Amino acid sequence: TGAGKSTIITSFFRFIEPAQGKIVIDGVDITKIGLNSLRRGLAIIPQEPTLFTGSLRSNLDMFNESDDLSIYESLRRVGLISRDEYNSLRTVIESGQSLEEYNKSNENSEENVNKFTNLEAEVTENGGNLSQGERQLICLARSLLKSPKILLLDEATASIDYETDAMIQNTIREEFSESTILTIAHRLKTIIDYDKILVLDHGNAKEYDHPYNLITKEGSQFRSMCQDTGEFDELVRLAKEAYDAKK
Image 1 (cartoon, helix red, strand yellow):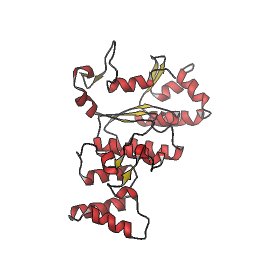
Image 2: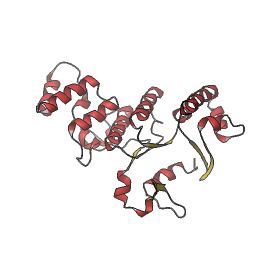
Image 3: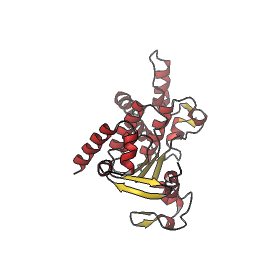
Image 4: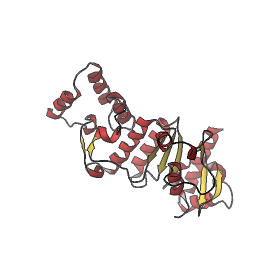
């Protein structure tokens, strides 16, 4: 608390401007370009997923920039619709059939229908008709659709169970392999296989290295944090695996 983690996130989006120093992305000082240009290259998945009253489509593609197939592809990639459902929807779209009629026929069938196959499905205020995990996955699908250069995760999985957390983290690793990912972590296991760990204390950078180097360094703050979890041996094993794979 008070280390400066969330300040870094807001600084990237320029909700606050630096009093000194600068943030440089690909050689560009972010204060020298327009906010629209900057923010189009960034995506964030916050701890409390932000959804709006409207349809599933309007929550995923707020500026009407993507076609139906691309939206369904993003839903498939985060696991909200299955591959079979995606293939059926793709067949409908490519054959020129009406998605509205297809969804109506599904609703009239006696089988349980996945609500995420209908892009016009209602999303109530703050996503109140969806579970916490579903809301988080919609935010993830929205970010996928945007294909950001930098993805920021602000304790994005702190409020969900470990199983859903593991699934989301796996999706992030696979689907955002072309993006730089900056994560504020709630669970150390979530970030133990990352390329670098930055330990902050009252706004100061205290440690910055590969997780395995930090966890095996006597007296390091990161090592102490890992010991406090009660999962120290497991964290060392995971960090070593990631370190060896990187080498």
